[in-house]
Length: 358
Ligand code: SF4
Image (cartoon, rainbow, N blue to C red; front, side, top):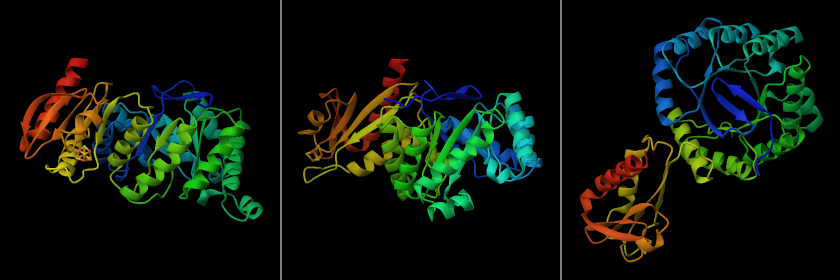
């Protein structure tokens, strides 16, 4: 069962409560280059990103929100601010939909209050993002290291710093590059408060390693009903983060946008077609395909003897023969296809299926 949380609104999108789990990413363009940042936002939107975060290193660069809103960006935008409360205030004025700050690094209480008041009057939530590097000195002394307990206590103390000013439209994230620490810390916080939680393994590495670490940690929490929005943080193209996030939600049955779930066999001595290449080509061609909210299971199987039967639960799929293959729907073979037409035919079938579902 999903953990009960309060709900906050980021533009048109809810986080927590009964809102579906959302996928976030972050631009890595120079924020001051508004046009380039706009270009990347479009790419992230096309990849299915629900919420986009933008680093705001200066008061001047906060104007990016005004620019992006004027250009018709649909995704809600989060201003990522460190240290300077004036930048947070500028981001609120320029049209950001959420502010990410840590009260602890904003400084004096009156500055935190200014940010809280500005967000309250504009109806913006604040995300507090705690990670191993942000844990306060006194907690490091108390726990000896940025342990799960230290991270959890830090997040709750940061939330208190906003609650002090009557502000409770808060999302919390507790990140670590260590999967077990992240999971443990998040579970502690989940048990101690009802704030919605943003999940992520930070500094997780390049795509392959990073996706495994994130999915291990986030999967464990999401299956326990914990987590309201996710970012698969990768040293890679941000669009990859979005695709990985969407795939994770889809694999856990939590996707509200539908998508294509490919099931494919591991190949064996019976395989007579280049199945690995076929599966990769198909995934590449469909990676940004809008399934109009429909969840489709597509099978790519090595042999027609076992394939259609093993993949009976698929909506449709192909199974290999010798230099050719067959198309099947719900386990029933319906058409023979030349090997070099298999990917094209599978793609056509996918488009037909989406169209029929409209
Ligand atoms: Fe082997 Fe056929 Fe099973 Fe693929 S579907 S693993 S080719 S038996």
